Every structure is written in C-alpha cells, then in structure tokens.
Length: 61
Image (cartoon, rainbow, N blue to C red; front, side, top):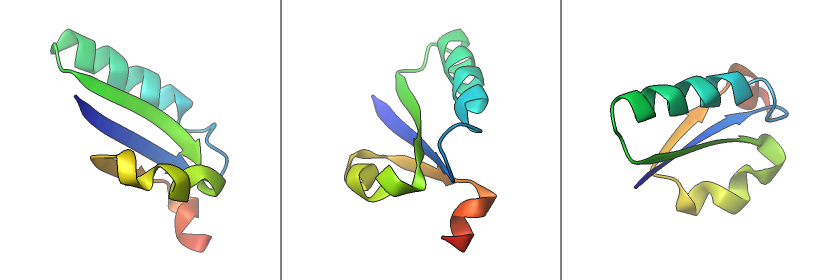
C-alpha cells in the first residue's frame, strides 16, 4: 500500500482532493491510503508517507 499525504495550512482545503483521489484509486483498483494533514502535524507523519503533496501556503510556514 502506498501512503499519500496532502499537507496544507489547516488540513481542511485538501479534504475534497483526498476524496477525489480515493475515488479514482478505487476505480483503478489501486491500494493507497490518502489523507490530509495540517502543517502542525506534518513532522509527526513525514516518516510514514511514500508521497507528499504540499499546498501553496505550506511554503510560507
């Protein structure tokens, strides 16, 4: 299973993208775990992720 983490300022704006990614992964029969986290939690989960996608506002933090 691939673990994909989306990181944004609060972890909320990416929730819609997470749902779309999970839907597409199901359609393609891909084994993935996709979740969104706020910047404040990013350092705690970075070691678990295979792929990290950062939101634009993360660059400012």
